[in-house]
Image (cartoon, rainbow, N blue to C red; front, side, top):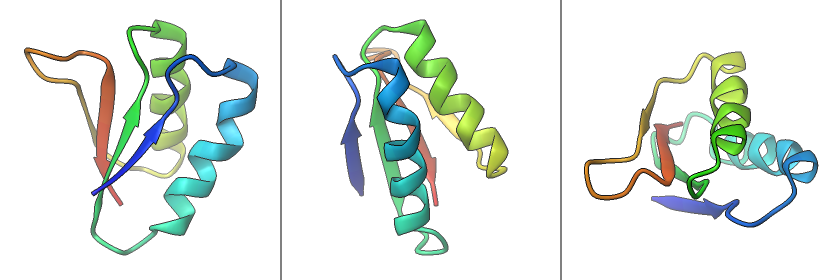
Length: 72
């Protein structure tokens, strides 16, 4: 499992970091967690990019809503 912490970072700068993380692990069948905090805007950026790559995702869990998990 790999974690990319986006919490507290600029919305403008994270797009390339998210894409780089997805492509770095492409076809490796590993979980990647994007820590977004509670920012709806940051979550939407991650979800939009995951959709471009046709990746399914899970948004948080009952105890922690501040991340998005996918398998690459």
